[in-house]
Image 1: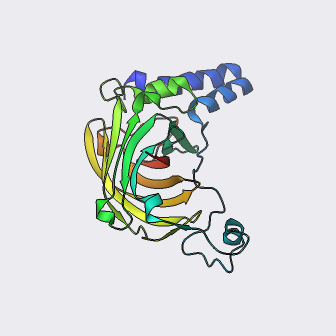
Image 2: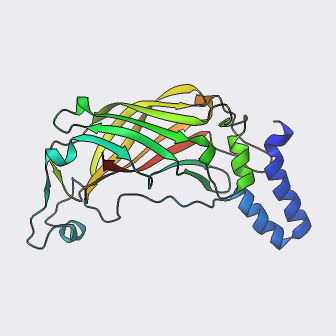
Image 3: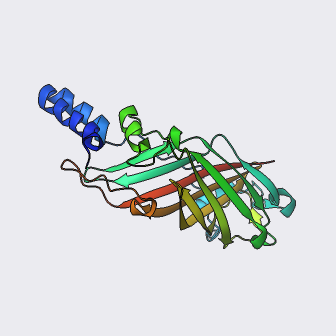
Length: 246
């Protein structure tokens, strides 16, 4: 592996050797996790499979008269845009811990049709120059040609091809499981992926959380394994999207 590939790791090692305990804190900042994943779907949201009569969470989400609020097709169907509060996460697991990278520069458009899911479409664009792990030197490293090569490929894209499991009838605040299949393009390379997803309609917004797993090899990247840390080959991609009706 090239020397520059190991630069941020070697700097941390030197810091530990020279600075002792203070160096350990610096080393942890270099190789440790500084980003916590935040789900857009509120904790305690009842699932579509939840027995609402027995679930305290579902009961709390329902109106005081005990009746759930139905969401109409008019509310759901149509064009939606990815809001600024959306995030995409990339996670890799090392011999130390799982390290998360967040990208807040996400945009895209969805067309929803719950009456005919084959007419539902989605596209998304991720600005790869905005990746953030809480350490600027590590971020510069993953944006380099060794990994995401954000200089040559500043954008990653996702285009959905199918949606399986979306119901035709929705209840406000209820999470619905579905599968979203499509193509993820990173570094100019396409990869077919499947996102295990949940969606909630709440207060006029669609909230979507979905995860898929790819590998470094899928996009022509080398595993950043080193003498300091071993790294699993899997990269978990997680969408945390807020959609506004447009």
